[in-house]
Image (cartoon, rainbow, N blue to C red):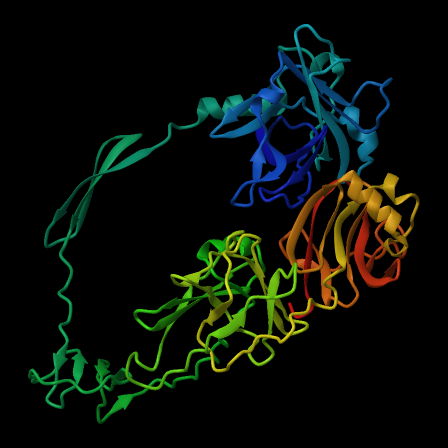
Length: 583
């Protein structure tokens, strides 16, 4: 019996075939005239801390009996092509829940018309759980999914139904299998017995077939060659007439002499191998900056060669350590060994050192409801903040990160070349403070009047709009504020302050509109995930010509926006990215 495996992500009564991270894959296939066992890993559309889909709860799918049906249409009055009420179970193994189905053998008589001499067809499959006190019309649950049915190249001759159903009848292949099994020689078994040392190699076999033992006698190998130092002070990998203990010369390229020996040094006559120049090294730059190593998890699914940097300062040692991680591939959490560089202040190790950026002195804002501090970074776009401190009666106090009692977040606006430091609502009272930076070669100044970005009071929207809410639109460029408000109320569209968003994943139904709408002046762009962790443009003709857009103009009230999106014609999990134009 052939086993066919797959992961099925459940959303209500329907299931989609995916990998363990939720990316869509082709439906499994079974062939006509083949005994098949389906082993289906049932998952929810939620992910855990590693980014993998969470298994379903077993107790939600326990019934007294199960049945499976396969058909090509939704006509309840006709019998399905395949159906079975036995050999079906739902079990939990190693923390995962599996639906195991011994499928009824797909026969040519039921499927030949649909296949019509073609390679394969896609059929609808439904599994249901039935309680002892219930009926098939009132199932405990159903799971509907697609299943591929493949044709066969050759299945042998046709036999009558009476003979085919006779339990005493053996097909030709079954008779041949019985003959081969009866005449097949027993499997041979050869074990290793004793292995001893001797001057002459030898081997012997003891015992009788099929269980025998191989005994070996192996001679000792020749002694290795000991390196020597010649009279010229060079090392020799080979025999020399006279060798003395001498101080070796500086490291040099190995050579092969005329006698065929390797030399770690120059010889009067030697054959030198031609060397080639190495390729240029990579530049020392990065895509994002973090302040704690735990923040690295937010970029675990980024593309190959994506880089994240972190700097930490040790005031006692007067050092700044810069660590750079680089994605080896687009796979989840697949990082190269990090590059670590330690820079010393002028009082550190001997040698010339780059001066640290002077701390940025700032004062508490006098205006009400000011949530952030802003300063220009055009002279040093890669600057990284090490700490934000305020002056208190007891001394300089370092504000905690990601806390209402300190700093909520840092926002690097690459388009406008500014850095925003957002303060929590319960920061202790202060008058002055300073920001400490990682290693650099410039100075920074606080803006005289902190001003929000040009798009600071605008919103951005991302998610999906159902066909019912979309109210008959034929393109994402026809979306109105009324449609957006209705989708927000329905919980399918997110409204947020304009800013950067690394990734947003949703499970959207068929014929819904996947959209990302950002202020025209924000400099932001949007793309979708291609199912393999790569960014790609939205389809502009998915289901209808001109239905999608990639940065088309959109007017909402008196404000200018840009819209990205497409019409999604099947139920599926989709991810969208909203990023800076410099990414």
